[in-house]
Image (cartoon, rainbow, N blue to C red; front, side, top):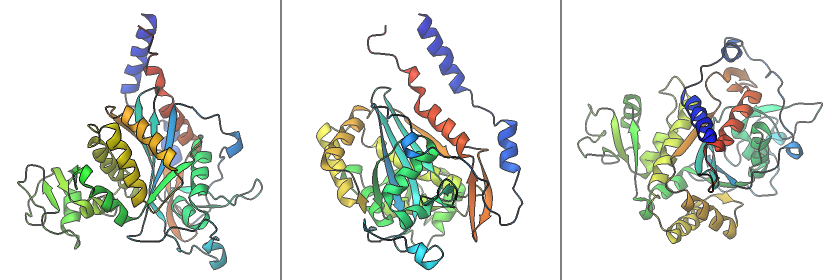
Length: 358
């Protein structure tokens, strides 16, 4: 009984939103209006010093390139930016960065998105020489394995499996018959305005779920739940400039689409889950997941198909500030604070009791 009471009290604490501390606010405001400068140095956790893996938590990095169609970066490719003396886009940049975590003991599905313009320590940094850049350039310059490792060192846990898609491949995923060929998302007035004015959105691509409003035909379509055809779903995820939060809101839209697609899988059989995993791999631009990895991931997801999907954004409110660095706009992240929040997020399994606990 005592243990139940403690768990209940801890759960109530989690339900109360944590206010940003004064130090968080000061951190974010400190350099708000400065001109170009170097990032303030920060510490990461070296790969060989990361804590042991939680065997019940399975992490997968989902990446989307900022390209409609682009060949995958060869494993032996050199860093194109080194020879160019500045960033050179040979293989595409990762516009979408989402970590999918399946916790089979705590019965949790977690989506963690990372903004594309976050400043990170580059893989070629040394103990004496720290080099900084935007996270969305890491794949192009160093490859997906290096990006997995870098994210692990910045957030404090190991992630090794990844799957990457271009925009056309994301469109093809949404178009899969088993997923219904569309996705339902809640659109704000700003979302509707952007999609309506996008020359690529055709009539019938964005229609209210009740069928009453087609945003391409109805100038007064209100906010609400809309059904997006595959390419409209991609364009929705790419919205950024119409919103003052910029890339921070863009990551939310990616999670919205992923969550909506996941909801369609709740009634799947294990065979259907396995078939979908294989379809995703065949559509992907690049992955290091073997056939066995795919079957295991599908099995974990199927076990958790009735779970509520939880979400986290890196950075959280108050943990970033704008910076102009190396001729580009970016955001400086409070990575030590991000690690703390990430670990709290992953370790909330105390709410789940052992099977033999009455």
